[in-house]
Image 1 (cartoon, one colour):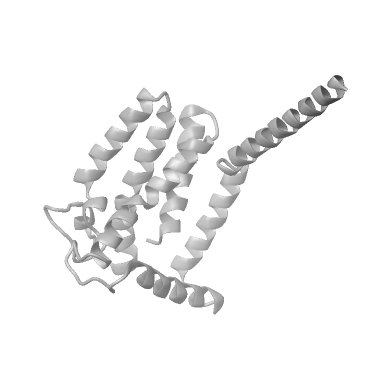
Image 2 (cartoon, rainbow, N blue to C red):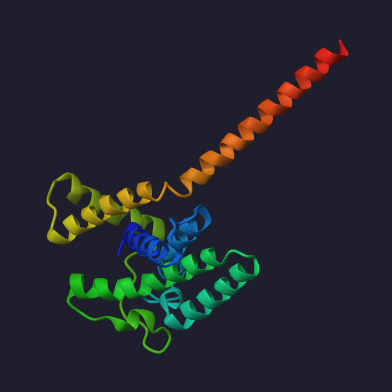
Length: 209
């Protein structure tokens, strides 16, 4: 799956979890955590495979359930100690959703149930790396993807992707645009504080006169 597909799936799952269990929209920190964690396995494995040749293909330790579960538990524990349990939950959900989504994707795209995607080192995925550099490979693949979109030659699978992207954008807006919302609030507080200091300085200067 493409990175944004993982982010879309993870955010939709987490938003649904929040509304059903927590009865609230995702906050900025946990929204960021779930999206970042959803692409983290690729950020780990793709460079290790394509740049450094540690793995034959881009599925290694980052996608392994034997690494993902302990990592999710560790981050969740740290987040709970820091009194940010939802951020830990979001990270765990985002990270664990990635290898499972890749396995499901392998069924639809390749017609094969590649459970070994998440079983490194017991059953590593065999193959050949697509190129020497992760950025070059990504640019090549994204170029091919963009040309397909611009040509209007969308398969059923691509139409599903477009539909999910639209749904995720709508859900994100209905959730109050977390992350963007917090950034705007922080910017507003900063501007208010600066203006407040300027006003106070001006008032003090006037009083001295």
